[in-house]
Amino acid sequence: MGAVQRTGHPGQRNYRLAVYPNRTRMALVVLGALAFVLFGLFICYQAITAMGSAPLAGFFLALSALAIVFFGGCLIYGVVRLARPKPVVVLDNEGLHDHASFTGVGFVGWGEISGAMADNDGVQRLLSVTLFDPREVLDRTTGWRGFLVRVNARMMGTPVNISQNMVAMPISQLAAEIRLAAEKATVDR
Figure (tube, rainbow, N blue to C red):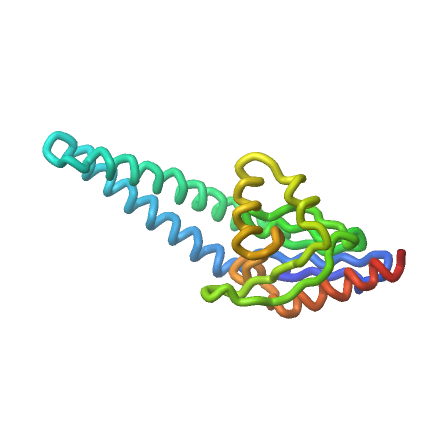
């Protein structure tokens, strides 16, 4: 399986572009998460042993427990993604399927997409997909994920943001493909 699988081109009946995770970066995420889980366990152990003598031991115990839970989740997510790779972004004649991160919004139809651009947030390269009405996508995401998608949308200006770290295709190339597919889909309808 390659990092990118293509069938047809935008506007053709059998069009499908599947972009898989960048395995090297995913492995680094797994190693980083493992390191933080181990560090959290170490701090947790230290806090438990110092519970009677250190006034802030309870605070460090709670903080380390949160770190273990959060980075443990990242670790599990990364291991599952490495073990069973699935496309993180799929483009087809219906729209864009975003599963690049926990805040991925799922399906977004071409009629909802107004543009796509490669951007820098100062730390990493991002693909920002602009929408005619972001509220429609935000209303479809609920619960904890919905909360995170709303926070992400406030920070980035759009709910659909895909990090270069998560995809094995240059973001600028993916943005151009999205723009072309959206244009072809709206012309053909």
